[in-house]
Structure formats: structure tokens, C-alpha cells
Length: 109
Length: 109
Length: 109
Length: 109
Image (cartoon, rainbow over all chains, first blue to last red; front, top):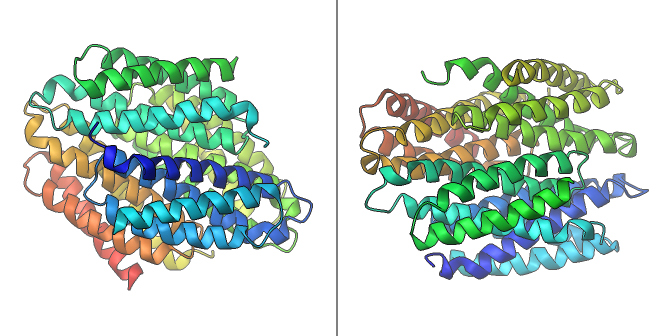
């Protein structure tokens, strides 16, 4: 398979996108939504970035590496914000973001 | 986890999106690209549909079920086209499309 | 241009996606975010639907019409929710959603 | 409107995405698809980048500027490839890519 070099990063990106989407929707159902507003914003950015990173890697795009470098930054920012909150969906999202950031940094190197 | 009911369908959609993106890029590198043109077109549609279906399920959207019903149709069309070709990427994509169509049909029911 | 038949619907979808993204981000900056939570959720769905509808029409996808039919439903739901709120970004979004729903319904017919 | 500073770049991105999607689908219908294969690949990347750049700007994302910097590079690459071909859809796409690259470079500055 042509994309073998990308496989673990694609998987990390797919996982992170789902974790971010789940976290965004769950944050919007919390009692104190205002406290989670920045989390929702970053979740949206991070989910979109991760989905597109996975697509570019699967398509072996010329721009996959540069995109992964930026994706890693968004993952770090989102993971840091999620790490401030105790909700289960935030903790899971923070873990997925960290794992994805590491994979994307490896890809971008 | 709130999205447990969706988990296997989300995973099938993520897998199918990667298979379709891989297939599209690989078709464009084939000697006889013309023969693969419809495959590329359907791969693009199917990858986009599957990525969005996964996002809507993860966000527990009100429209997730209706979207999955349409996604299943696109998966069936893409899998049928891929099934006409012998290339490894097409066979893998056809399998991923069929699996995803079945999951999406189950979700939409 | 091959997509002339789609031009006004593509434009309405592009406008609606921007209005929904703007509305989502603005809702998250409101004092009473909780009151806007459903608006944010629908804005996310509607922005994603409209962007993808525009892409499918521009690519003359076999599935453009069916997708537009579903997109119109999401636009109507989002526009209805935005119409409940007085904020400028909600009113603008409600208008863009209504215009896009009408274009998508015309396309789907 | 909060996104006034981004308006012309958002519009350029939306236009470029449509031009790229139209070009990709049209390339796949050409007699000599093989000659257009790289054009299709870059069209897919550029359309996805432009759509996401528009979304990030409309959401006033922290990452909008960095994303626009990368989007400009993809637009330049796609515009250069399209500029090698005589087809009407390629010439229109090359123009849209150049205009979008300039707007994105201005945003990223």
C-alpha cells in the first residue's frame, strides 16, 4: 500500500478528529457552556485540520508534510485547552490531540 | 462515551475515506488514467461524504441518520465502480466502500 | 462554463457557509453562550453541508441534487434557530440560510 | 460585521474553490486525462485548502493567518500547473488561483 509511511499518522488524525467533534458537541451540552467556549472553537479547528491532514496524506499530496506541521500546532493548542477541563470528553480529547501532535510532528520532520 | 452507538460506523467511514483518497491518488498515477476517470470522481465524492458522515455522527447531529442514508448510496456507487478494476487500490477501496455502506445503512435504519 | 446551471446555488451555499461560520464564532463570544448552544451546533452542520453542496455542484457530481435536498433541510433548521435570536450575526445568518434553502430546493427539484 | 477584515480574502477563497472543483471535474472529462492528472491532484488540494481557509477566517480562528500562508503556496502551485494547459477551465482556474494567492499572502502578512 502506497500510504504505509503515513498509516499511523492518518489513524491518529482520524481518531483526533472524532475526539474533537465529540468534545465540541459535548461541551455545548454542558451546564456552563461559557467556560467551554474556547474549547469548542479549538475543537472545530482541530477536527477540520485533522480530517484534512488525513486526506492529504492518503492522497500523498505534495503539501502533506507542511500541513502536518501546522496541524500539530493546532492539536497542541486544542489539547492544552482541553487539558484545563475535568470533563471526560475533554480528557479523552486532550489525549487524542497529544498523540496526534506527536504523529504529525514526526511526519513533518 | 456518548457516541458509542455510532462507533463502528464512524470507524467504517474513516476507513472508507482513506481508502477512497488513496484510490483517487493512485488512479491518477495509472498508465490509463482515462479508464479510471469515473473512479476518481466517485472516490472524491465518497471520501468527502464519509468524512462528513463521521463528523456528523461524532457531533451527534440531528441530521446524522439522513446523511448516512445518502452516504450509503455514494459508497455503493463508488464500490461498484472500483469493483470493475483490478488494481489493488481499487479492490481495497471496493471492500471499504461495501463495509461502510452496510454500516451506514444500519445507522440510517 | 459547465456549471452555469448551478452558479446561483453555489454562490448561495458559499454565502451561507460564511454566515454560519461567522455566526458560530460570534455565538461563542456572547455573554449567554448557553442560550446559543443549539445555534452553534446547527451553524456547524449547516456550514459543512453548504460547503460540500457547493463542491458537489462545482464537480457536477451525480449526487449533487440529492445532497442539495438534504442541505435545504439543514438550512431551514439552522435559519429557524437563528431566527429566534436578536443578535446581528443571527439575523444575517437566518437570511443567508433562507436564501440558500430556496436555491437548494430549486436545484433538488 | 466581525469578519470585514477578511471579506475579500474569503470571497477569493470561495471563488478559487469553485474554480478548482470545476477544473478537476472538467479535466477528468478531457480526452487526454493523463496529461491533466497533476492538474486534478492540485485542484483537489487547492479546493480543500481554500474552503478551509474561508471557514477559518469566517470563524476568526487563531490559525487563520498561518493557514492562509500555506493556502497561498497551494494556490500558486495549482495556478502554475493550470497555466500550462489551454482548456478554458484551466485558464479560469489559473486566474482564480493567482487572485486567491495574492489575497492569502496579504492576509498572512
